[in-house]
Image (cartoon, rainbow, N blue to C red; front, side, top):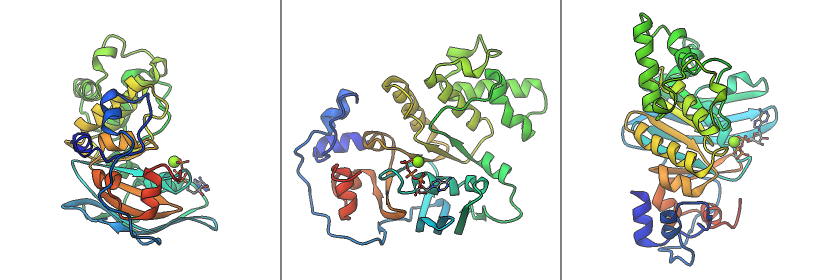
Length: 303
Ligand SMILES: Nc1ncnc2c1ncn2[C@@H]1O[C@H](COP(=O)(O)OP(=O)(O)OP(=O)(O)O)[C@@H](O)[C@H]1O
Ligand SMILES: [Mg+2]
């Protein structure tokens, strides 16, 4: 949907990566005509951090690693059934912010998080909330596929087992098969479920990790550059999958690829030096951003 609107307007400029599918290259030819000039400067977030029916809400988030103030007063809402892409130059805080959303920063000794994050109205930093249970509800897929050194079956069964989601082997089998099917991997692995997950190709391993994540019925899926280690074909498969998964989950993806952000997301959030600079619908960010820094980034002047 985003692509076709970009294609119609032809306004999307910095897209010259020849590894991208032809349709994307056509959609993103250079010399585009912009509809307006960015007028805003400064560090205050522009655009719209709110969304209809927010499911997860991050308010006034600050993250410090010792003296390094890595995330600066960021407020952002997330909706179900929607993909939002976090973009910005290296070191701007995308991963740090993403990790706040399922308390992965808890495991970094120097990290301190302030502000509030709610999931379906519940404070995720509440002392009553078990971070392991939270991470089942807010699953994460990492840049480098990280299957456990276990069989394909046991990788997917791991979460359902520790969370007691199956009453017997038949139910567990069913969860494993369904998760692999939804991750688009079942056909390729159904005859070798006992083989090690680490023996799969990179793209297959990433789909296995997605199957492992969805096996526990999460409500939100966080993805930190999930395709950066994959070839264009494996990337396309994961992107198709994201599209399907967004029918059931809220998906937050960090990506360095603006083509990917354009292909998969409804909204884009642009970060710069720990500030959330601009949030808006994806086509608006790429065709007519309000902030000078966003414009500089999407047109390739910074980053
Ligand atoms: N575990 C950590 N301990 C200390 N400082 C950290 C840690 N992780 C990140 N930082 C610092 O926080 C800031 C933001 O880093 P972060 O990894 O979130 O950026 P990023 O936008 O994800 O970058 P990239 O695109 O390179 O992945 C940087 O200054 C970084 O040095
Ligand atoms: Mg990162």
